[in-house]
Image (tube, rainbow, N blue to C red):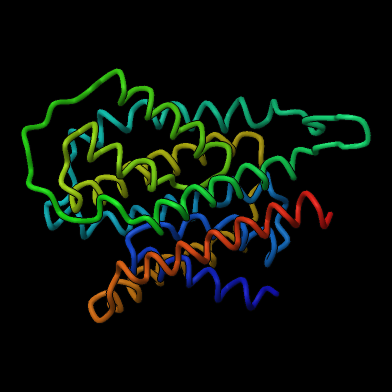
Length: 264
């Protein structure tokens, strides 16, 4: 299973390089089901993998002028604060027995996997629908600060709980709320995801022991996969791949829900 896990780790980066997002939703299932990492710990590991991979992916975007630093700061500050607070205080405070109704008991690890699976379903819908993928003309930026603050706090909370980047939420927000063209929104999103994921990961270091012997190889393979995916993207149609990957994520999300609620 570990060999499959390392192959899947490479695929996380390949998918990011091919379709520009979505690969982070595979990280937690790979860690939980292929490496047997406990779900809550897997969300912490995922923050490091996703953050490092996104940072590497953001560098060439920045060199091409596709990262809007002002937008990254305006949107990133509330998101970064939210994800750090979530990992440092909220996640440790969630009780091991989240809910008990009669004979049904919802434990903390299952709760995390269910929240993550629901996120996967929503992310798959965004990828399958594929709206907003066409390039738009740049317009004068007018920041809707109240909505950006709310969106940033929500995305940070979500990232903190499930350990995924949340690019399917950030990119539309940058296009709609910050008036960024799609290509710039993708590049800026990668930088925001990198910053909030890595800083959120710092919130775990004070109370969590990390298995670096597992974490570093998985991260290295995911980073290497980005370059493979980027090369493949020049010979393949990204929109078709994005829809196919969306269906795969949908099936996987439904499987996790069924496995955690019914099969267990």
